[in-house]
Length: 120
Image 1 (tube, rainbow, N blue to C red):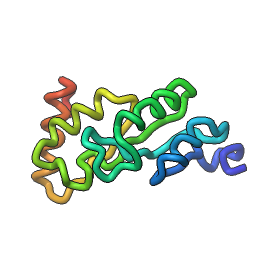
Image 2: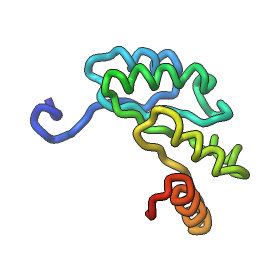
Image 3: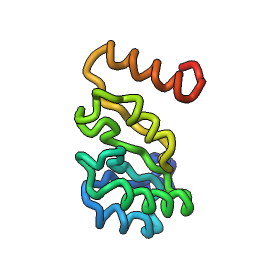
Image 4: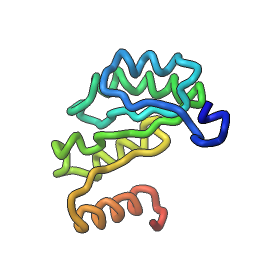
């Protein structure tokens, strides 16, 4: 009702279980999904090779996808370029990178500019 009344634009869910992520790909009411995805599989609900096909199904249905745990809760913070490049090559519409300092913000912006050739 809130969507129909224009109070909210999209309805979706945040996933912390692979079975529910798979179910979301087939639910007619799901419009956006937050999904844990990174190249190593750390802090994810399943390995990337299992999650990516689900993201592809969602993409085919027009479900918006938002990547979380890009740096695996810091486990791959020693190589953020690798993790960010991975996000740019999987079927997510957007992603979030957790940062703890201005230095990390500046570094991630620099990496995104370098990888996408777009000035942020």
